[in-house]
Length: 287
Image (cartoon, rainbow, N blue to C red; front, side, top):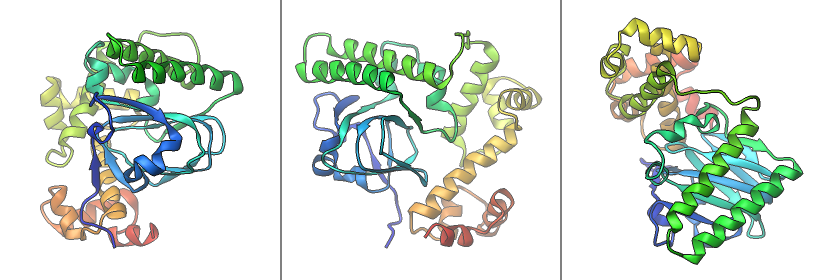
């Protein structure tokens, strides 16, 4: 029987003096953090550094096997669960955006394409890459347990190295300067969208927040995402609707209310147009 709510986990769940960063061995998950084995929504980033394990990680309904060296990234607000054996070799790193931003600029994580590309959660590692990650994460684990002066600063530096390393493998090629004004506006739009998608479903609201015209916002979205701003909004709302249908026992009417639709019938029409099936059909397909 599904509950009416998806469990929400914060970084405070870890037995650490630091509420913003945690690193530990994968093998400890089944015994120490069984809540991670059930579908839940996280308020922090998780990077799974798999060396050798048996099991699966499920992110928004997409299952990834843990059968060879790879990196799996779980972004905040995703619905995540993990089934892993207690002999797994590897590490799990959890951190909040606030932790990273205390040293680097706000929204600095948006520069890493792997953390922001939709539909991408894992990348396989070759032997040399796996050895490099093993070395860095071992240093991180030692620093975390050592609790020495300046520990947080050192951990942020290691984390930055890992993310830069991962971004190189994910987006190979010559380094390019990404921080132009157009891309920054699009990043800001995505941040606003994650915050306001339920209440505000029209491009004009976001354009107003960004101090640009609706036409210009559409142009940015089509240039960098290949779709209109309206389609990005509809996709974000649809994703949340699918999560609620799959992971909760809320009725269609309750989900419509949760997502602030005028009526259940309007929500059903919206969902059908954007997925090709009714909410009830989608829910049955997920069983």
